[in-house]
Image (cartoon, rainbow, N blue to C red):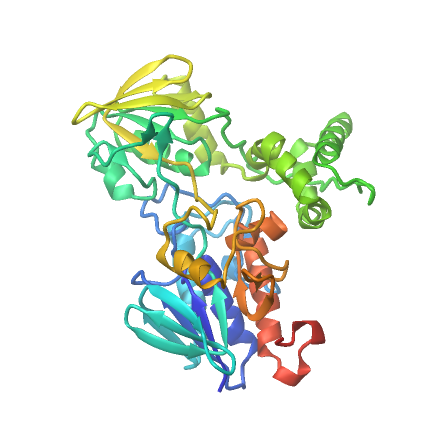
Length: 455
């Protein structure tokens, strides 16, 4: 019997387990999923209890099975839930879907271990021993599907923010947000989708709260249209184009040309989606770094958009003066006991009841405090990719260890592949990775492609 251990039971791990069980029917492949939370399928992204937190991808595009695009819609219909294919489901509902998907595919070969994985150690003769808080598991292959690493600690030029009652280190803690005073003045550090969700909870719950959303750029995600664009505008870019600036010019030119033809800019961005991984891999490290510095935020706010209902709520909060979106970032934060005096870089001062970290994940393996990532780095099994976007790996997820050896039986999936792929954090990409990996691992060992055979 072969065993695959999956570390992490969020969307990445759940989709991996589901695809493995589905594609390996009739074999002796055993799947073990290790997740410290009480339920699989949630992770950070789908653990919210606020029904106003919506997916930012349309229902029709969020099936967990790449070859059954209508699977999520059909599930919602069976459950008696809103099943508009072009609508946006609550993220909490999607968590239920992922849980049901895995349960439906469980044919007795799945073991769920409710534990935090503390170590993964190479085993003599091949494979690994996975050490969790509840015991040890021997596995032939380990899939690191831990998703997004925790946010880095908020800091200013004066150093890290102190541990104080007003300092909320995680925007995902909906209970802590709701426990703030009804008239709270709150500073959200960050202006991406995480900050948007925090603002929806804070301002939607209480009519007199006020929020300052502060980031370096002051840019918030654009909105989806209620109806999807009818045209996918894709124009090829020369194979000789290998600089970030040329890519940026190409996208802007295509947006202008599309507009001249009466086509929405969203059609250009969505049309590029299938090309971005290939384009990213053309760039050398210097050009990737240039993209991150000069163009990444423009791309992200256009690519990762808000559901229409969410965008409308955010615009209303801004129009009424309850939500302020500011660029420049934090200047200083002074602890005043129950409150903090926040000085922004433009000189404005806010006396805040709470400062909330909405900066998103800290993917750099050299900076994370996640115990497993630290341990694997110390062992030499993992190393950061050159830009600190995730784990150093091949595009198919096979880990490149400290010595530069490609480990065919140790794989990262989802967000940790960002350095190799860039486009790897949304379900449509993650489910494709899960299906590809499951197809490979479901084959008999002697039938696998030579380049993926164990070295």
